[in-house]
Length: 251
Length: 333
Ligand SMILES: Nc1ncnc2c1ncn2[C@@H]1O[C@H](COP(=O)(O)OP(=O)(O)OP(=O)(O)O)[C@@H](O)[C@H]1O
Ligand SMILES: [Mg+2]
Image (cartoon, rainbow over the protein chains, first blue to last red):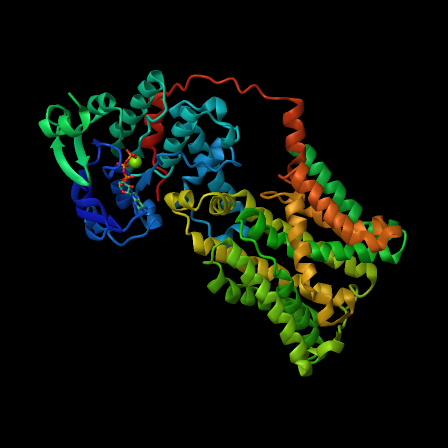
């Protein structure tokens, strides 16, 4: 079974060690929660897994493949998709166009090929559009499909980013605070989406501050503090860990 | 909506194709051909500036290379005009590649400066290599063979090439590569996340724009029938750029209208010919201040004003079953 894994990953910015020998493994069909105080290195770890930061030491692997030095783009092709702590949609495109962009790894038409043989590109386009529309129905954004992304509500942006991430049929989906800024009701809906994604065989890394949400949803949880793993285990184990309570959860 | 757009396109094409029969004089034909030639370059440049967001102000250098290439190959080496036209396109894309390779990695401002430097260097070379280019005195340029040697014939040739080039760039713009280019323009981080090879995408459009600039150069030279380094002043490069800004980013129609209007402007305000640059400036200022999205988006903007769609929010309600079904049917790679 191929997992997405960070092995003893270290990352420093100048004198600041954002990650110190962090190991974490996301399995297929698993929701892996990642919690920790502000600045504990959660986003940095997600960036190391998706390729935006290259680890100073340690390795990143997907199954047998070593991704440590591999570019963000090649990781996307290998099946690693992500969303951003601050949603990054293309403001001038419609929602469905934004989601279609996520299907880039499935595109076969070359640049000059598209320019010349539009028939093939048009066939591809049709398949991609159908899938994007299905996904948008699936995550519940069908009513805003043709709206410009710049006009979306915050929650809609978050769901649209998830749909974009799912477009290429990833093996792993990394979510950076997907519940940030959502109402309790919307967080429930988000939970439905994430569970569905997991049940489809995709491994999910869930970075979140809503700890109740994380503990309820996750199969395993990792807690970070100051760039170190302080506890890893089932939600119950992590929730009752004395160290985790002291540095993060509070009494 | 789609059908009405097709009607407009066919109508405009018919009007342009029959122009030799209804134009008032030869000069109008010449002007139409000039707009067409400029558009051939701008259509490619539009993908660079309007779609991928790379601010090239030096495409006049590529135009000059295509023009001199055509003039030298047909005049000095007596190539047929068709071969020379193709060679100019090839030369333009090769120079696009050589210019793009080192400069497209630079951040926006420095890239613009690199293209500016390129245009200046091309001018200097055309002055210095007097044996080939005629130096400051310039070169006469042979025309095309019959039936494209008359003003009407040349107009038809330009129209055919322009339609072809527009179609190529439209294919790029409307499918996945178009979205990828807009991602490169608006959010490199997003482009990377979905797997778009950012540098390669920029380079490919730049090479395509070199091709269209080279072809435009050949036709431009033939239309002018005599070229000197002064034909390719730097202002011309700015002019191309301004046509796209006025037309709007991320559209094809906008810059097309921008090109037609700005090229014809000196004629429209003929009594004020000395003021034409003033009107460029005024128009640019008005667009930037009043419709910064460009005239190509004006229809959209007006429509949104007239019929403000209710942006009433709704509760996001996922359909788990539908999502699951969709996820099981992988878009296989
Ligand atoms: N590109 C960078 N350059 C310098 N320092 C950085 C960079 N990225 C992150 N850091 C630092 O690394 C530490 C970890 O940051 P990170 O963003 O990973 O935290 P986080 O756990 O995601 O926090 P939050 O919950 O606030 O999102 C912080 O001290 C941050 O200031
Ligand atoms: Mg963070």
